[in-house]
Length: 300
Image 1 (tube, rainbow, N blue to C red):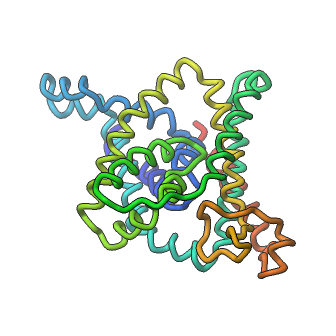
Image 2 (tube, rainbow, N blue to C red):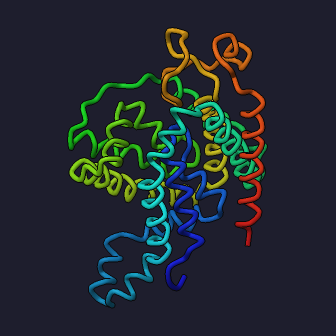
């Protein structure tokens, strides 16, 4: 790739927007837009050998070695999206939680279908698919912890959340919710709290550099089981993003997509508030159509 890529930048913006929402993974966006493998391999290339290339052959060789323009275009899109959409997504979660959750329900459902279609001899991988689904459902049943936002907890939270962000399925934002760190991180982005952001980003960087090596090895040596697990995680994560929920006391939710809620049917929800079933159903279908269109456009 030569020069800045607007197409990769837009994919990065979509990934950033997804990662802001608890329940949606930026890795899902990377997968359905056809850049997932390139992303993993490019991140894996940021290593000691890359530094040796920099000192021996110069900046141009180093930039080419790490696929620099791809990474720069993508990361600029992610950062631009998070900085510009954090307030908008937060507003949407507060004011329109049902349609927004329905949209992402459709996005994830279609993404699971796309990943499943890429599994060779998919019937032989059903056990792995079930394992992935059980794992995602189990994550969704965990209850949030209460951690204080210190430099260390921000660093460790970033290292853990980035592993989820790069995987299609479980979102990094949801992991932050489970850790009790979602609000501190969103507040740090909103108010540009530099120290908190640097601690979180440093944790993300370390976690990412370690985890992509594991993913790359699995992609090359155990791709069918990995894709089956990822499909299962996507399907299981639908329980996390399900729009109609009550909290532990059976009350309506005051903030969307947090852990510790109980999924209910739209009809049970209607006994307490408007389930917005028609609007949510239409939006969910639009989410499915959007993913299928993106997948078709992204095909070479």
